[in-house]
Image (spheres, rainbow, N blue to C red):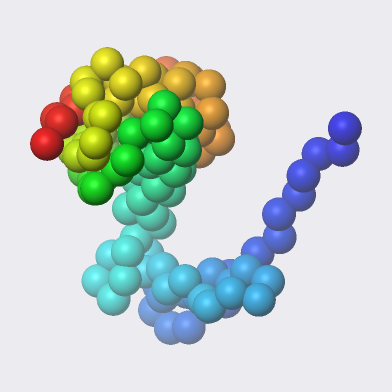
Length: 136
C-alpha cells in the first residue's frame, strides 16, 4: 500500500504572519507571535482536539448515540527551555446526547487517543495525554 502524501504551501505575509494554503481551500492564517491569528503551537492543540473529536463523533454515532453537543477544551503544557515543545496535553470533554453515558464516551475517547487519531499519534511518545469527561 502506497504512503499517502499531503502537500501544502505556506506563504509569508508580513512580520510572522503566514497563510497556509491547501489545494482548493481557503487559506489558514497563522501568526508566529499569536497576535493576529492562532500561533503554530496553538494550532497543534486545535489539530489534536479536532482530530480526536472527529473520531469520537464517528464512534459514538456507531454506538447509536444521538449527539446534541460535543465540546473539547484543550490545554497544553510547554517546556520553559527551547525547543518549547508540549510535554503534556489535557482534554476536557463535554458530551450531550440521547444514549450518551460516561462508559460510551470514555470508550470512544480511549479508542481515538490510543488507536485512531493520527495527530496525537504524531506527537512525541513521551508526551503525557490526559482527559476528563462530563456528560451533560
